[in-house]
Length: 107
Image (cartoon, rainbow, N blue to C red):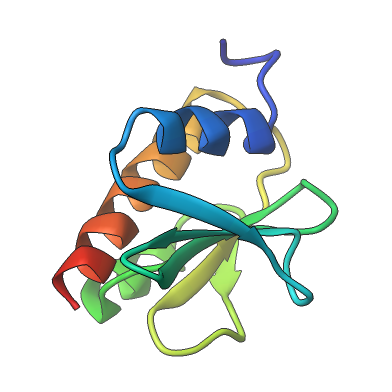
């Protein structure tokens, strides 16, 4: 699916495959992903970026990868805005979706 998938499709598939993930529209972001009522990921309104609430250690490493910057949502949040939605970008979307979900579940 890489090459034809969008960020929205990638996150939607990740959410479908994980129990207890819900979504809600957000004024700051296009769509938030939640677990136990806590947001852990967000699709930007333009559909070209996704943000994730990661542990501080993972977030510190994430911002050193291409197309990633800190997010204004708070400590540990990063935004991935890939120039190209290639296999490494899709891998990061899925890995960070899972990492952020697990962190929110344990909060």
